[in-house]
Image (tube, rainbow, N blue to C red; front, side):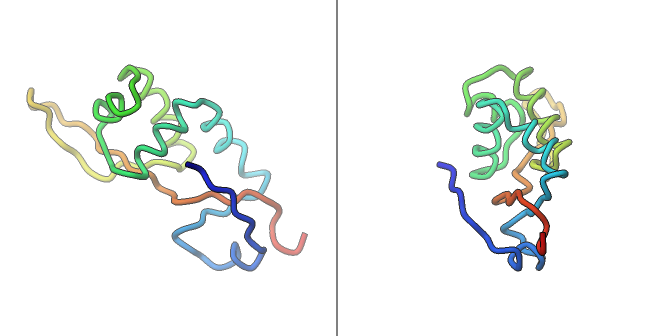
Length: 112
């Protein structure tokens, strides 16, 4: 479940690991990466528990290729990050992804 919360400008001035504050100009790539319901589901799943692309594909019931596409966009937008590696039963090294944010705040910079 997503939550919308109104923060005042001072809450975005101080660094807070629970809130990532973006100006309206910075928000484009982030919003673009979240236009798909699949991307949104991936981000929610990774905020609950880190996982490999294969694990995430199983959890959101989509293909590995689809997850790879969305992970790339989410990573470019700074919403997910690689937090480690695991090895498959075949010995292949796989990245483990996790959400890089707990919440996003998009709005005008303070004082505007």
